[in-house]
Length: 375
Image (cartoon, rainbow, N blue to C red; front, side, top):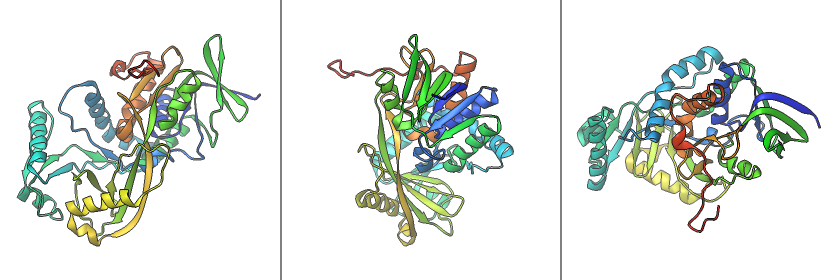
């Protein structure tokens, strides 16, 4: 067999793998990224809406992780543009969560009040105030809550910028090549096998999205990470109908810089099925028109679906149980785009400094068992 050597092999060329590669490259770590697809970012990294939101009001580990990652974005957008000439279209437009009934009002207003009392931003608006901000909203709304710090990016551009930035700093990419297995010596993983070639490394990072569980299973470490399909609808929205992202009736509306509008997204646990369905598309369009009746006159552009990686108590960040040189970074579910910067930063710190600026203890991968003790 042929052999290749790197300090770190990252399995997965999506946004998480590329963010880790970029951060390792900035630390002069020899890195190789492997992916079964012929291009980076072809799965959930491409399919998402690029929403960057964190509405929780607590200081628990997961909301803290989300806020820390969101805080990295403004400087990261400038850094990537300077390094790669790619504009990731970071826009801090804020989210307007619209209210249609009293039950929604109680929950959202309570959340806003808790956020403000704990030093976070939120603003409760009357229906009249919300309609002044966004005249295209339905006159049936009863009010809204504004989350002004929320932002968005063009996620395909972001993953491309991460990969280009990493490549410019020496990262190698081996694309279009699925992993066939791993090689152990003296109980330690020393190589992975790709198309009959052994690729040796000191450390392996599994960042393969909803396929990561299959790879951990190859290592005798079954960690359930399942695909959760999300369908999205894209419509033409010229002139632009909204200045903010809009959240309500179970969907979100995301106005893009190119004049188009995303309506999304479903959450369906249906295996590795990326088909779009009439029912899923109809649900989103109906909800979108409920939020903004004028959308009924928009031009339909296309629809697609992606598979988010869902893991119980995810995201899962850290060394695999009983594996001293295999790290897992997956299970980000709906927040892979949001959490990419902090994930890349923390995993790079873990592999180089052996300690991290935020604790990864709450996110340690574990082999989950059911009530009968079965994995």
